[in-house]
Image 1: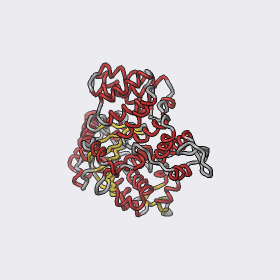
Image 2: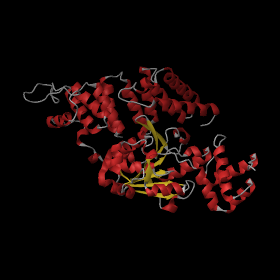
Image 3: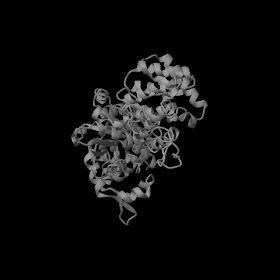
Image 4: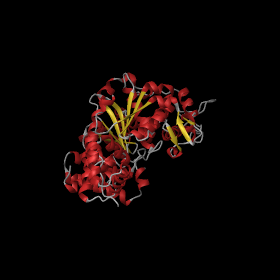
Length: 505
């Protein structure tokens, strides 16, 4: 005789699971709960829902087994790689530049079978070599003891490798002969895994303050109040200046005012404000590379070395990089050739080399506005906000109608907490171009924070209207050299408009 689950009994099971681990079950996920209940009841030889509910209340181990059945463990190596690339190429170097002692601590919260934590370890190993074991400490936690056992074993089948190329597999895995691959010992040493309920006590397993938390594609299991509770607990774990990264589709659910939502390279993450960060960065000038001084010192030898590393199609050799004059027996480059080479280097994430070429181009042609803009964008991308501001101001002085320079100045001011100056800069961009969707968006964000809801609604609506009418691909590239994920901005605008409509702030 089939087991029947009446509405009252379904409600009791759902409330028990939510109290235990925070999982919620909307109508479309209720089927998975009923299937798990039936499976465990058959295994224990129990015929009625009431009897099994009583067992769950009395037997914590049975409750644990049921919860593990309800956990969906769909993951693979290098999943959603854009955020991982941003973390390894941009965010971690910034954290290392400020670190005085101890490793950068990284937490994979809801790590499932461990692919995410190992992916981070492999990317860091590729970038920092053996030093990565000293520089970084990586921990993965999950409520499911079976998935943690898999993670600790480091043994994976082919479905886990759908996002990984053969070169990376060859560097970090050993075939076992059983259609499975073992994470090599160096990577396994760098990652530890622990069983932990995200509603539990992190200190109980020795996790204190951390620098980066990956909390991706986990919160979909939780209702809003549990999401907020877990997000708050994770925020408390972060050091000042720490970073919390959620899945691309989860960003808006966590914009709770607890951490600061930051946009970089068209991607979003959360940051814990560091009160001394900017004043320290301004005062400790000895750590800044010499070639970022206000008077560039780029020698002909240095330019030749950098441009030699750039494909020849980008840098035809016609003019001197230093003075624009022909010099017998020496390769010569024009400012435009230097700029084109810098642009190609920037697209390959070779920012330091690109900046050196831009310094050389500006040294030759002091009125080269595009070179100033690209330089300001690269400085902004590497969190050198004061330099980005100075460079953008130079572009504005050369071209008072330069919309992109005002946008960069606005973004810098907003990051530094000066919303009044940011608002002024974004309004200046709108005076130049009333269809500047990015300026409408940031203006709306400032008005929203000021609780000027009517004006904020109007600006969000305008940004949304402009984006929806045009091509997203074109919108993403509308502000050279800045680029943005336009779809994420549309999603945020719609979310904020829905909050304003509902009267929620």
